[in-house]
Length: 541
Image 1 (cartoon, rainbow, N blue to C red):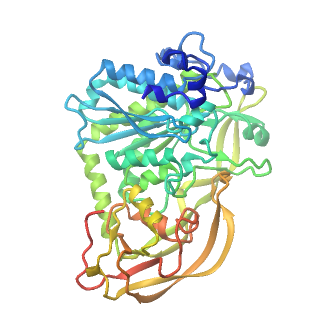
Image 2: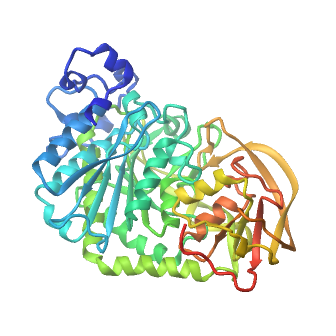
Image 3: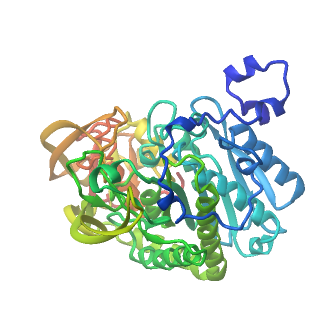
């Protein structure tokens, strides 16, 4: 595993050297000349904590961040010292770097009857505090807080975007934002995370990021960000009401833990790069981020961002402290909830499945326009400024488009890529045998009324991943169908129903049709409204 931690160019340059040379400071390509320098009046408002961390990024004299090789050196040493720590390679990045999964469990090993908490670090490579905190948390849980592991399993991904982290840039090697790829799964990084989710089924996920401190905020408001940390849970159409209620408890646990360290917390918010657009929005409501896709897996799914992008190493210990505190608060809450959390998740999945063929489902939602006062720091004087802004709330969602919930979907035999994508998301897909065909199915066919080209968008505006999409206006027409042998049926009678509709209803920006993964003609994609007599849904994938 270690031998794959360096890039191929590094291995050529260091062919005669040791692993320690590859792990030496300097491989994490952070450029200190691009750091935003805070006025002293601002900097002194964010003192570092007394807590000292022993991770590579805090080594004496350190001027950059932990390298990929150092990540593996650190967690391998933890595994050597503690039987509670196991290291897996859950996938490889686009440049060939191993993606580590640290599995922490009790004295009897991983226990699927206990809640599992997943911590995702550094999906964005230029947001290092979450990755450093991931290492600190692995160390804490393997040592002084190991008793918690008798009540909860913990999965830690220190580097969800190892190429971006090594090059200190937000996106993956091919320019795709991995945190907008959790439904489409176009990157090996997102595929690796999806694989871990399928295998371990986390009941709680904490996604650890950092937010921009100056930049757009100074340009628009003449102010820098004041809050230490921002939080937001899954906010997406078709989120199960039970999960929505439970996640409020975990948001409160994370917030209380951060505030107990003397840090300030608010709801997550961002703003577009357009200097004329002063709207401030909460995190997006599309089915693409880890936060929202996790919610549709019936996982309590929380985004945590700390005050860091653009600051380099300034206040790094304080930033890491916020991540560590929030994560421990969430883990402790899961350990306390135990069986009740597992029951809530099972009940949510059963309720999702029970809605098949009944009522309406949401296809497209949008944030609710409001006004809100936010606390900033004057960019020159450091004085606190309360600024009223146009606010877009993700806590109250407006339904833009609904459609009757089908029993399931028929997919043409040629659409194997779409079928594989669904299975990678954990969805059960049934291949139709001869016994399943030859009988009439009640269906609805999609009719495309209008089509144009565009880009996917999030709360900040267009997603700059170079992937144009189809923008479709469709209606449905009732009919009947005789599916051919080899075609597929995707039942909505399963817990992942919200993910299924997000992927297969063509007129939303993240659908497989909009993103050219599958066709929309009647032979290739139909909504099923009535199953043929005698047909039973296969429980096998």
